[in-house]
Amino acid sequence: MSTNHNSELVRKIFEAYLENKALRKTPERFAILEEIYSRDDHFDVETLYIHMKNQKYRVSRVKD
View 1 (cartoon, one colour):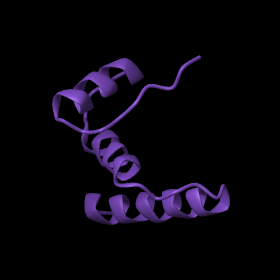
View 2 (cartoon, helix red, strand yellow):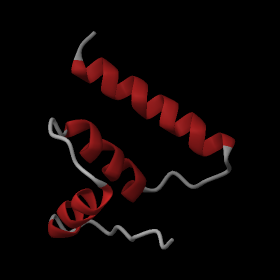
View 3 (cartoon, one colour):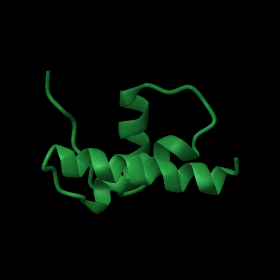
View 4 (cartoon, helix red, strand yellow):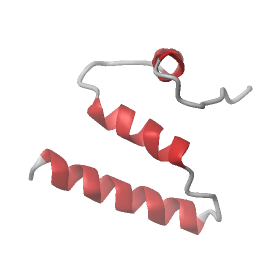
């Protein structure tokens, strides 16, 4: 299975999840999804957040 095919499949599953939960399909959510699946290294949420902020994406932290 190619990476492009996997990416399309993951996007469709994510879209279905958002629809099922009545959540908006925002560009920011899809940017985060793309960033996660483009990485080859192990990362935590904080690392992902910092990287996305440095790339000028509009992302916010979820408070505990």
